[in-house]
Image 1 (cartoon, rainbow, N blue to C red):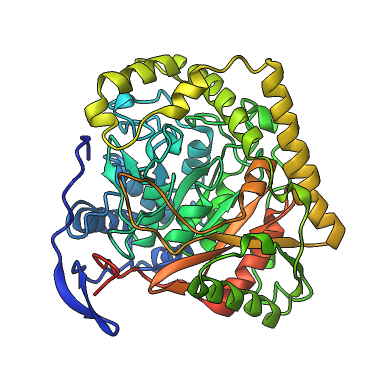
Image 2 (image 1 turned 135 degrees about the vertical axis):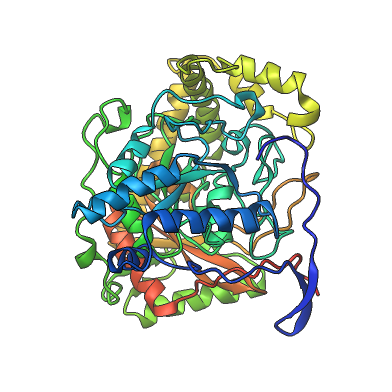
Length: 527
């Protein structure tokens, strides 16, 4: 899938959904719809499927509803080598060699992760169209070693949504506009837009996204998924097109907490090339059999950051019901909690991101063999020269601001970076956790999805995950309910290296509420 022009809306047929007649795009039943990784693995073990068979089924699903039908435009590239890889993994299974719970499971990657195969790595930009990496990103190599099949690469907000003001999430000049599979004229959020939409629509078993500030949590919430942003330093960033050395991380996006935990476990590993791993890759997440228990909320102390809960009545009702569900499952709710550092870092954060984007992207592009652009300055020039196809809806203000920045030794950068660390980590997450002796803080993570608007850009409800993004600490979003069929998410925030705790709490919440619903591919919200 390529080209910059946006496709026309999918042809729709009027059908009846719920109480109103709502235009939908017909989607045939799918054998693997909503199948979790353990269920797929059981089917592989029993001989119900082979890995080659799973791969072919997902490829057919992509063709049927991503390229045609609802035309989600969530998958940029399908891996031409996936069937051969699946066949080799089937042979390993027959020989009794199993690599773990991901053995032979097809997953998708956001297209800012390098793959040393025939698929390009573009960050959604035509400036990198056809550019191939020399080797896998470290995390991709980890996944392959764990037996995962890289099925393809997903669309994203161009340059991970760090190009222009008033941008539209899910749009890239390589792939056009990704649609939200729940309501097609609604936005999937971003920047991991394609990963979210594809997993929600069962185009793969799970996907890898990346986040600098909200790019895993927000699209996961908008698309009814579980998404985890790990502690910066748990997952390697080597071979991932960067925005920020201090905030970037990859993370899992899945339909269940179990699947997210399985994927996260396979992604971890110490990479000496990632400066955030200089002191090790963190403690890991432990034994999933012990971690994922339905009574995991009993006696947990959870703080409610009320400053982020202002929302219209339908959304507020969903969020309050989610808090009630936490209480009913045995959690002790400390409501409200607050700390000065839960906000107030925005200007410092943006200054840090502009400096780090320039430095990181220059280094990344200069090291890419045969890349058509070799620096941020080249990207800016390319965008300007091809503005009709690359910038038809929004500009490149962030690129221009980053290009004007000095080096990472400049006093203004160092002062802003230290301010972020002090405010978000020490006066924010750590302060509120220590003051109230908390296991986690809960905040809204996003939804219901706003309408896609290429003129005015993104909108949305208040969220509270940015403090964890700036602090470099983990956050986990879990489906919390729906407003007119559109998902709403609740995020659990924790101190550094508390992934195991957040997964335990999120799993118990998921099991007690079971808010995940399959999408209906409605063309619009109104009847």
